[in-house]
Image (cartoon, rainbow, N blue to C red; front, side, top):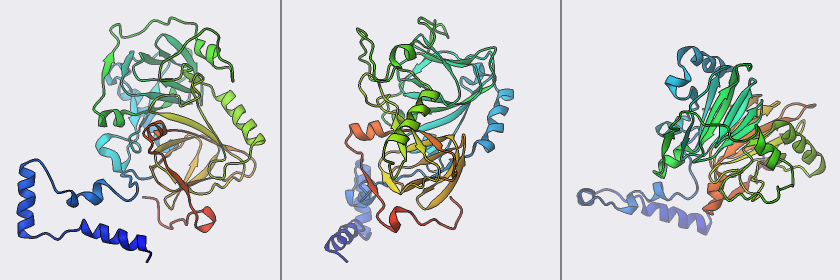
Length: 377
């Protein structure tokens, strides 16, 4: 045992004070005064390292899709507000979170349907899973959306979603920081007084203005804490990933990992929620690492598996899985001929702003986790 281990054992032991009749009476008196003794909760509220209540989960699209589509027959967008099946982490049921302080759900709309305009304190994003004709309107900017497109609805913006009459049924993943905003007791919600907003700009104008890589429009100012590029298209994203994978050294943990950014600041797309896309080359086997901050992944392309805290989760296109904060994780592309792509969103902007981000690589077993023979919990 090292000196550090001995010290840690001694300190932890001090927090395990044996009860006595006098101590129990003392605790009751403190409780009456709405106080408490720190040593009774020290190990719980100030752990030696992060301990997430979230558990790794995979939500397989082939299991969920039927139930998502069934909701169309059962409720309307007008009555339900938003026709969404939310993803629930067994360790975060009390706050309806998918992982950590992040919420996620699958929303479905049929051709001709339109949800009313609203705004809220939470930052939100949508990643299109299937269908044609979907669109989102954000503060008067209308954006057409296709599969694997990624769209922002930042906090405080009026936004609404719909599917054109000529479209097909559409499903997308919603991602929000609702649990975080509620934990901070800072949530507001409002419905647009006219229920819908007028489109005040050319369709997809934000892409035309801000979507050119490395170019910024002259004499156009933007000082809001989120990206003016509300829509990030799949085709140029995938092309950039392939080019990056070809021209750069491979990240041993995440392959070719790129972050969606605010074209004005170069930072995260929103103040509290970040998003990324990564490409795993054929046969890629990533090494294990862990970091503070929670991540929710959706498989945009390909198939493979991830090992999270020693459990293997097999995934294929459209499946969603989560990696809790400080959980060991590694990704594998099982195809020998085709790449795999993982979209993800996270709370890393919060971790970074609060100087709470930390990461480390696994040093044992050549950087790979031993895999449990038991089924994932």
